[in-house]
Image (cartoon, rainbow, N blue to C red; front, side, top):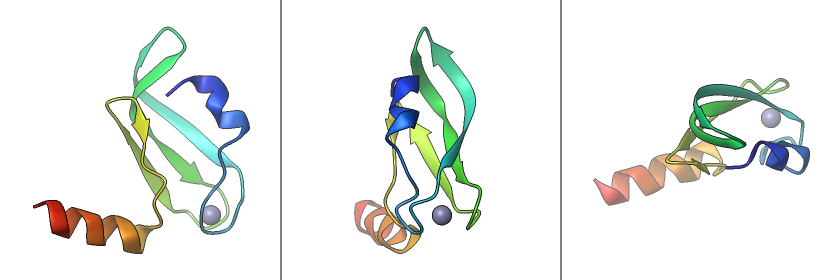
Length: 67
Ligand SMILES: [Zn+2]
């Protein structure tokens, strides 16, 4: 995801701002990392450049389905 996406991203749970943590980047793109909500402490992973902003419940359901 592009770093300037941070301007429009918000926590799906509480709509607060997210804090970006970068593990791997390429120019303006974040390849791997995480987005942490400062308010509810929920962590959303970024994998292969795609932020996973599903609420935790839905994310667990999706993971259970795909495995
Ligand atoms: Zn939140």
